Length: 164
Image 1: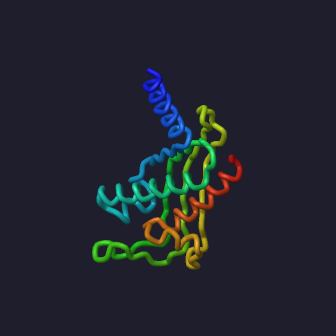
Image 2: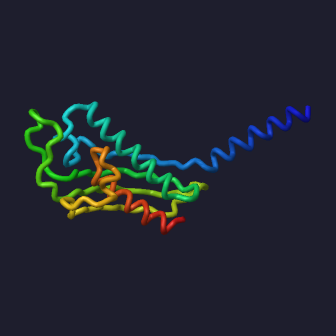
Image 3: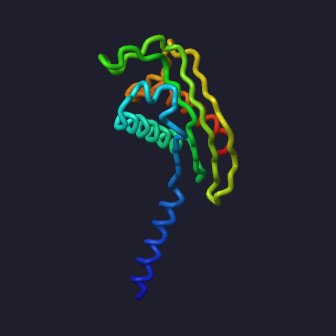
């Protein structure tokens, strides 16, 4: 009986430790078909889903790395205007010229482990200096959204300084 009790207590302990260390990120998109670049750039639904998955994966990774506590992030993208403009989409898919700026607009809410909102608001991240690649952007070179993810990384780091 003591052995069974011990095993149950160990299982409960490991579940609560896993819950304690888990971080929650919820990403949503308000009318992504109307985003400045999504429809023009990707055309097909599968490519749109790939782009959203790429962004979701990067945000989760950045949030987990930056946040020391049990705060959760809810982020709802309003618009994503990717760097540069596309020409010749039919012939060559990934050609971007005039890489001048990148804009991301979103609403966000950060809740503590008890579900209380500790910070929320609207953000418009604008990067006007994309022609000059920096180390942070190069870290995300394997992402289609390298400029945008780099901007989100800076934003998440600033938020982490405020709430950690």
